[in-house]
Every structure is written in C-alpha cells, then in structure tokens.
Amino acid sequence: MLSLLHIENIAVIEEADIRFASGFNALTGETGAGKSIVIDAIGAVIGERTSRDLIRTGARSALVSAVFTGVPELPWFGENGVDHQAGEELLLQRELQPDGKNVCRLNGRPLTVAQLRALGSQLVNIHGQHEGQQLLDERSHLGYLDSFGGTAQALSAYRAVYQDYLAVRREMEGLRMDEAEKSRRMDILRYQIAELERAELRAGEEEPLLERRDLLRNAGRLIEAVEGAHYALSGDEEREGAAALIQMAWESLQSAARMSAQVGEVLEKLAELRAAAEDVSEQVRDLREDLEFEPGELDEIESRLEQLHRLKKKYGATVEEMLDYLARCRAELEQIQDADDTLERLEAKCGKLLKAAREKAQALSALRKEAAHAMQERIRGELEQLDMPKVRFEVEFRAKDGETGLDETGMDEVQFLMSANVGEALKPIQKIASGGELSRIMLALKNVLSENELVGTLIFDEVDTGVSGRAAQKVAEKMAAVAGSKQVLCVTHLPQIAAMADVHFSVEKGEKDGRTYTAVEELDWTRRREELSRLTSGDLITPAALESAGEALESARAFKEKMRD
Image 1 (tube, rainbow, N blue to C red):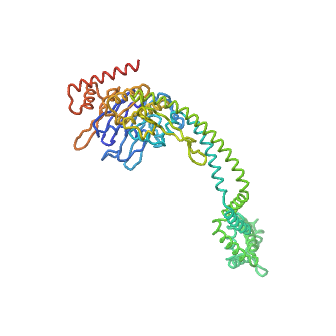
Image 2 (image 1 turned 90 degrees about the vertical axis):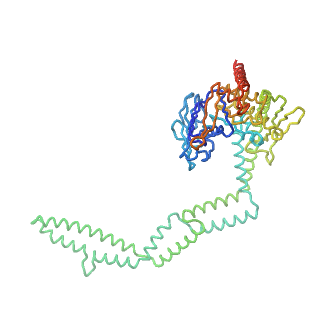
Image 3 (image 1 turned 90 degrees about the horizontal axis):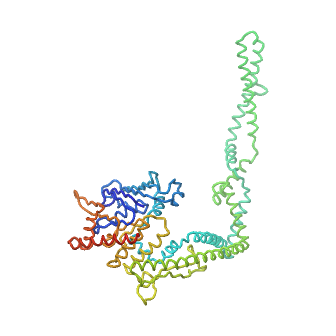
C-alpha cells in the first residue's frame, strides 16, 4: 500500500507529507483547493504522463516521493532484474525538470519513465472521472471483459497463430501480380542479369586495376629512372658499376688486412657494403623486368574501368554491391518463375493457419462468454448493493465483420448493455446511464475487476459526480467494503463518503506573501465533524449541522464494525 507521499513544488503545493493508512482514506476540500493535485502527484510518481506546467511557478524542479509497504512479489521485479523480497518497502521518486527531463528512481536506483510506469501500474490503480467515459466507449468493453475473465494466456495463444497467418498473407500478396506486370518485371530482370553476367565481375578487382593504370600512365619516367639506377649499380661493358667497384676495393684491401687491425675493420665495412649493393642491384634488376609492358595494356585497363564506372551508376557503388544486386535479381527472377508453385504452397499453409486461428478464436470466445456470464452476475450483485436493484446489465456478443471475421482481438465484438428501469429494453450504456448511474456502474465494475488484480491501492478521483442521497450512502458503504481488502484513496465532495473513511484529510488553500499555498492536514474527530458539516451545509456551520455530522461518523463506525464481524 501507499504509506507516505512527499510532494515538493507541485502546482500550488510547495511542500507536503501525507501519511496514508490502510483501509479507506478520504480527501476533501473546497473546489480548486488542490485535491486533484495530490492525485496528479501520485500519478507522476507511478510514471503517468505529466506536463512541465505541473511544476510550481518559480521553482527549478518538482519532486514526488512515495513509500510503498507490504509490496508482494510482483511480475515487474523479475522482468527487470530487481531483487525484492515480499513485504519489503519500496521508495519511488520522480523529479520533474522545466525542460521536460525526468529523473526516476527505485530505492535510489535509476529507472526510465517506461519502467516506472510499468511498476506503478502494478502498485496503484487510479480511477478518475475520465474512466467513466471509457465505460461509454464500446471499444474498451472487450478489454474490461478480458481483464475480468483472465483470458490473457488464451488471447496470447490466438495472437501468435493470427500473426503467422497475416505474415503468410503478406507474402502471398507480394507474389501476386497480373501477367503483363509479371512479364515486364521478368524482362527487366533478365536484361540486368545478362548485362552484369557479361561484365564477369570479380570481387576486389577494381583497386589493383587503378594501381596498374597509375603505374602505366607514368611508365616512361619510371623506366628512365630505373635504367639510370641499374647503370649506376651494375655498369656496362665499358664502365664498372658501384657494386663492382666496391668488390674491387674489398679485394685490394684483403691482402693488407693481416698487417693492420684498422684495415681489417674497413674490410668488414666494405663486405657489408658489397652485400647491400648486390641486394639493391638485384631489386633494381627485378623492377626493371616488371616494367616491361604489353602494347595496348593501358587501353585495356582504361576500358575495363570505364565499364565498371558505367555499371556502378546503375547497380551499386562498388563491385561487391553490384554482385550482391546480381544475386538478388537472380533470386527474384527465380521467385517469379516459381510464383505459381510458391503461391499454391502458401495458400495451403494460409488455409491451415486460418483454420488454427479460428479454432483458437473459438476457444477464446468460449472463455469470454463464460466470463461474461459470471461478470453479469457479479455486476448485478454489486449494483444491487449500490441501490440499483432494478438495473439489468448484460454483455452482448457480435461476430466481427470482414473477410475472415477475425482481427488482433479474436472473433468477438463486445458491448455492455443496460436497462435502468423495469420494462425498458436493454440498450448501450452510453444511451441509458445518467452521471450518477455511470459512477455507480464504474464503481461496481472496478470492484469486480480489482478482485483479480495484485494492485494494492485503488484511487477514486471524484467519481461520485451526480450521486447524492441514498445512492451516496450506498457508494460509501461499497467503498468501505472494497477497503476491506485494498487500500482505497478517494477524493470526494460527499459527506456520506467522507464519513465512512477510516482516515480523513482536508486540503485547504491559502495565501502568504502574495503566493498561493495548499496544505494537506489529517483531521481528528472534532475537525472531521466540522468538515462534514461544511460539506453538508456550506460555510454556515450550526450546532445542528455539527450534531448531524457526529451522528454520521458514529453511524459509519457502527456500519464498519458490523461489516468486519
């Protein structure tokens, strides 16, 4: 449950600490005092979408912290690799920045907003006035039914088969084309394949060609330079080269090496020079032989490079990309040529998958209809307790339209129908329910759905719109019953609901130094009596109003004691 909420610089709340209790918590206050801001703060700390306008004017940032106690082993912990023992406290924090950035933490560990939202949805369920509008939206009814019936596993099994069926359908549509289009495409592919095959492309061929072309373009100067080096090193018939002269110097000193150590040292150096000169001479000789070019070789290379350049404009930036394009063209041509056989095979596969999807959809539909029957009985029972014994509530099933009668959700269209008065026909909720009836139907639905949820905290934000008198008392009693197994937080204007709460908070707005401030205060019995009198009679609080409020508190206490026995 949510045990502590700390708020800093959220709208008109500069700073507040609210310690919620288990059971039923009520928040009351004048319109505009900031009651819903407390709910907005809770929404922020559990990852709901927020606006930077929520930050108090002039503040550098806003912060909301929430301590949850008695948290069970929720699926989120395993999915996100968080070590959590059942019953341990959780500290959630979210800091809002004016530039739209958020800093989210769990027990000091950074989280993304998406992670915070996923965890928050398993901790708190906020039901506001907008959710009543969801009840009017027929598109949401199937989701409510699936949530009640626990059909997630069957729905997942159906969707897996249905997605496979759609994938095969898309593959078939890609293969289908009229004969004229098929003929045109095959002609294009054959032309491109033939052009690329005639080119006899070889991976990695372009770079060596470029290097050889540069060599050939500078062949004259290269040959002249190499010939000069060869003559200097090796000489000719008339003149000795450097290598031969070094050899002669070595031979001249060899006989004198025994007579002088210094001559011996020079002789060793000459030997090294002689070996080096011979090596260089051989390298120059090899280089000279490599520079022997075939007539017309440069023209051939230029022609090949021009061919590659032309093909690259059409088929790819490199030879490797062109070879890859060639492979894709061959595969596509083969696919088109074999399309009839492939289509026949895919049609058979598609038929099997559609049959399997229908079987899964029928199994899912059977679970939904079973759940719908149970849901109808449970809702009727809840509505009877909410002083709506004459209301009939039913779940209507219709087959889906379309070629297959299937979509992502299965084969069912679902709509909630009701009749508010005896003798009236069942009609869609949006055409029948008044504001007060809608609030009670939503409360009944929320109570029924919450039985199957791990969520420990339910928040009702002014869902009592249009409810008064005896109906308000019944709503209060129902919330007290829900609070027997869940923590309930309720923002309300009704004294009957506020009186039934186990803990009552007052939200009051004031001014100080030209700024508006909102304070949240837990009320004792005396202050609760005064607040209930205000809710009933306005600012004119009379002794009779105080006495009536005291009686309402005692009556609520007696009801809760009887309910718990």
